[in-house]
Length: 306
Image (cartoon, rainbow, N blue to C red; front, side):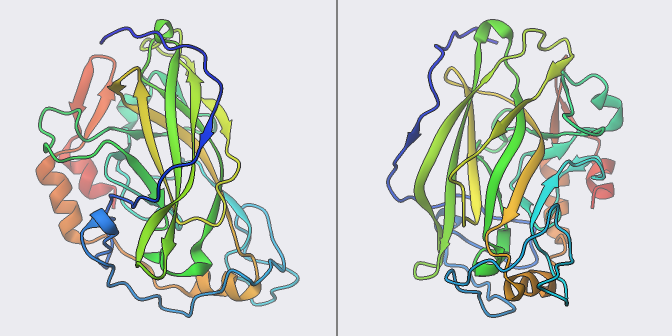
């Protein structure tokens, strides 16, 4: 593992050209293609979209389904994904209403005690294994992580605000920094694809002095400006190298907390994991980080994580 020293740069927000998302939520019950997802999405929202002009009428904390302004309930307010109740194995979608691209997983219990990073809350954290790192990975696998609302992206009531997370990466103290570049995307009704909203920034997270020997703490990070979006893309680099990274306590909030939007989210049809997605994961293998190197997950965890 090369040692690269990165200067202490300030966090920079930068404008970027309009580009499109490169990922497909391949374990959804409907195939959704966003630009380099190949073809326009065939997904049709179950309920009419809620327009952006509808102001929030009421909100609640941590995804409460009750509001004095919305007596019929619904999905309202902010919520946090801490992964503590998630089964070990690949992070099949969705987790609550949030979808994760290939590469996200929960390490098995036997490996969690030897992971270098500790959860920021509870007993588990999520790991992102860039698909290109394992020797068996396909050459066309991308190393960018995507977190969003998956096949619900065309429906305006599922737009969200990304507020924060606790992050860390596989970097030794001498390497100084984990550079997380985070970009915001929003579904475009005309092009029928997710497009950049020209908002991104690089978060410079301190490397752990004890890595890979343990007792590393995730760094809490706040995100501002990631509002009214349908996904975020995360690229992690240490110098010019791709590395494994970990996260916990991902904080989200619904952009529209009006009663119609809350009911729209609550009444959306569930999206079960497709069997072919599970079989594909078993064929390709799911890898996770250990202090001794990357290790292939037992296939039993793949089937049991559904």
